[in-house]
Length: 166
Image (cartoon, rainbow, N blue to C red; front, side, top):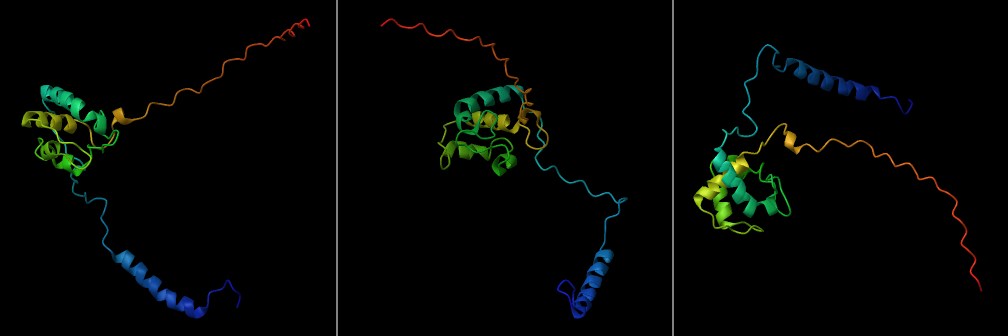
């Protein structure tokens, strides 16, 4: 028997297992293409457009208190996490979940003394950012054309330095 051959007892023991696996896979229910699957809920909440005045106020308050750590677009900055995809922000509606974090702070985050309207405006501003899918504002700029080096200046022979008198 050569080393690459499989023994007959082994082949005989594998055949029933293969038959069972094949039979199960063929008999399992499959969804037919004619049966439409139920629509799945959106992965991220669809929010109605916010009041433009509230957005402007929220942008201003966010800019003063939050931008340094969480970035201009709330996707993270120097030391602060991305806020857009956190469960707290995704489950928040009008600042009811964001508010306690802003007022009480967290580890590494100071607390801020903001009124309910300011918190609601910040929430509207944060909720205004697109969460999932294609977001053109987050695409990196297209690669620039390759840099072509400038042509070298023609070099003329340099005159030899004048001899110094002794």
